[in-house]
Length: 378
Picture (cartoon, rainbow, N blue to C red):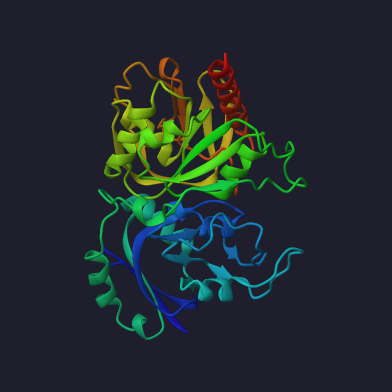
C-alpha cells in the first residue's frame, strides 16, 4: 500500500507501507546500528521519534520475545530501505510487518535512506509525519502537519514512559550471552528511577548480585532514602532533560547521601543537578559504533548511543569532572563527582544492541555500592 514520509522543511518521500495504517508525527532521526532493530523499536528513549535505519536490509532476523527492551514498541514510525521478504533466524517467532501492525506502529520501505540520512546530517533532525494508506495521498498536507507537530525541545516525555507503581526486578541475563552470579535475594539494594529504563540495564545489575527496586520518576528523594538503598540508578529516557525538573530536584536530594550511577538521560539529569547545562544536538548520536575515550585510562571504547541532547562543554559541575569524551565531535560522554559519590555516562554500557566494551561501568557501580553497604553496617 502507498505510504509517505513528509518533513517540516517540505521534503517528501513516497514508499511502500507496512505495519499499521494511519498517520503519525514525530522527530525524524537515524540509527547506524548494523543489527538489533528489535531492541531499538522497544527502547523507551525513542518515544515520539521516527527512526530511520542506515543498514539497508531490515526484518531478516524476524522478531523474538527475548530481545525486547520494554513491554511495547515506542518508536513513532520506522523507516527502512528494504523490508526483507524472508525471515531466517533460529529464535524468530514472527515477522516485523505483523509485529509493528499489532503495536499500531507505521513502517515505510523503499525509501532512499542514504539520501535521507545525508539530508538529516546537513539540516539537522526535524519534525516529520509518516503515513500509510489513505492518509498518504496528500504529501503537502502531511508537510503542514509536520510543521505543526510538537518540538522535542522543552518536552517532558518521562511522564509518558515511566512506570505507574514501584516493582521489584529479579530477572537475570541468559547465561549463553552473559556470565552472571546466582540471584541474591539478600544482595545490596539498588533503587532505579524509571525514566524509560531498558530491561538489559536491570539485568546487568541483577547479574552482579544486586537487588533492584524500580520506582516511578516522580518518587521523592525522601521516599527513596527511606528504603535505605546502597545505591541509586538514574535511567535512560526520552525528551528534553531540562524539562524533567522533578528528577533534577530528586537527584539533588540524593547527592552525597548514596552512590549514584546514571546512563543517558540519567547522565544529563545528574549534570543538571550538579549545576551544569544541557543542549539539543544537531542530529544526535544513535547507533552501536561511537568511539568514546575514557580520559581516566586513555582506553578507547566502541559504544552504543541513543541521545539527542548533551551536556554543554562549558558546564560548571561544582567540583565534578569530565571522564569520557566522544572522539567524533568531542562531546561530553561521562562525568563524575567523587566528593558526592556520583558518576554517569551519556552512552549505553548495557548495549542491546551494541558492543560490550563498557560493561566495566556496572562493575564500578557494584564496588561503590558494596563500599556503601559496608559503611552502613559498620
